[in-house]
Amino acid sequence: MSTATARDQIQPSEASTIHELELAAGVIEYSDSGGDWPALVLLHGLLMDASLWDDVVADLSRDHRCVAPTLPLGAHRRPMAEDADLSLGGVASLVRELVESLDLHEVTVAGVDTGGAIVQLLMAKRWPRIARSVLISCDAFENFPPGLTGKTLVLAGRLPPALFGLFMQQLRLGFVRRLPIAFGWLTKRGDAATRRWLRPLLERPEIRRDTVRVLRAIAAQRRLLVDAAARLPGFDRPALVVWSDRDRVMPPEHGRRLAGLLPHGRVVEVADSYTLIPLDQPARLAELIRDFTHTPDRPAT
Image 1 (cartoon, rainbow, N blue to C red):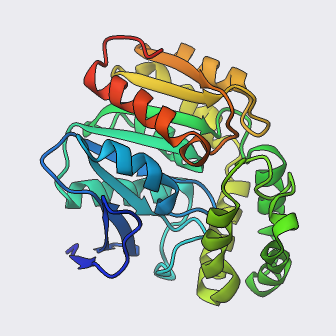
Image 2 (image 1 turned 135 degrees about the vertical axis):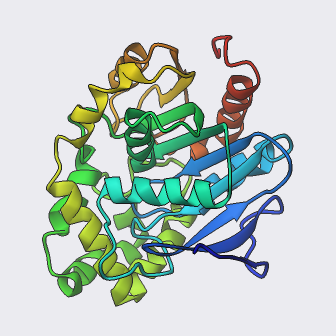
């Protein structure tokens, strides 16, 4: 049975409190702004945690219940069970279990980077609890793993966990984190966040073990999002696609292509941002999501 406990001593923003939820694969941390509002579930990417969404949540929590889990994608602090399925499909199942445990219905699910890939997997399954979806500059089609960053990380995942950890130690250096093969093309303004996200991976062998398992599962499923895309035309609910107009990791034409596949899809491009729009343009992203959830039948502008 799933159980939840609040950890009030860790607060990513004034709007949210960190909780823990015991799921089949292990304990998941998540922030929850609470309230009797429409529910948003916000998903991050590889080597990130729920704090990616802090500035967006600070805005949207005025009229949404914002739930942002820290998924076992390399920046998590609670290791998963040794037999946990850490493929992206397995992580998508964790999201489903979390939402069902919290008894959330008519949910808007949003994801950026690898989190957007997970949203696509949920959409492809036509999960009935999803009322709307938001895909934000994310892995799609054959761009999986995406760009120099994703390909370098998945290649490093071939190493044994101990050697993988040694390889990743170079990311302690700020100039290395800002290279295109690291976070340099993912965010313009978020180096402090990326440094914080890396701490569990750099310091804890069990987190490195989990991360290697995730990366090897990605390497073994290169067609995962091509196959998911073939099922997206069956997603008959409102969908918003938000993309950086100059994204170097996630091609902007993929955003337009995703929106074109979705019967009720629309696309908006955001200026002055790299892939991680929640870090680089949180106010604009919050504005777009609020407009979408409040008036889903009117195109966002």
